Amino acid sequence: HGNENILNMSKIDSGSLIIHKNLEAVDDLVSEAIRLVNDLENRNFIVDIPDELIFVNVDGKLIIQVLVNLLNNSIKYTQRNDTIWLRVKKHENSVRFIIEDTGIGIHKSIENNLFDEFVTYPGISADSQKGIGLGLAICYAVIKAHSGTISAKNNKEKGACFEFVIYDEKELDVHE
Image (cartoon, rainbow, N blue to C red; front, top):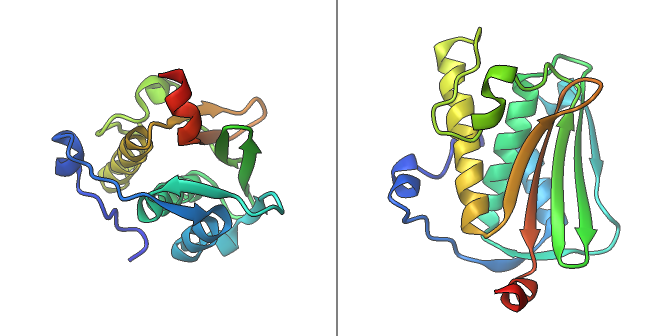
């Protein structure tokens, strides 16, 4: 059940993604996402969250969905005993969520359109391909609806790093 994307792409495509924001505690979002992800126990999984209580004004369900999708993505491209990190960093006017792994990394051929709807990894069966394209497209749509940013890159050593940033709205108003 945790793997199902609660969003259907038609909502996103038509631009009618409605988000319902509440103040959510970051550690609640993270622990709920972790609960919904299978197979993490077969990885070396490390969570690194600040001790202070951090609140973000977000649609909790959707942000949990993003975390679940990114964690599932990491699981898909790592082996047993690979490491997956979930880090949260608080900055003055934003909160960064970073999911990093020691897996096979992002294939060069799709690096630039990773968040498009139907991106496919070469050499992976059509079924799991569908999964990745949709999962990341949903992440992108959700973060964009929150006026945040999401990006992905390969690590120098090995594996991939996905990161999204949620900005403090008070700060956004100042810049507009």
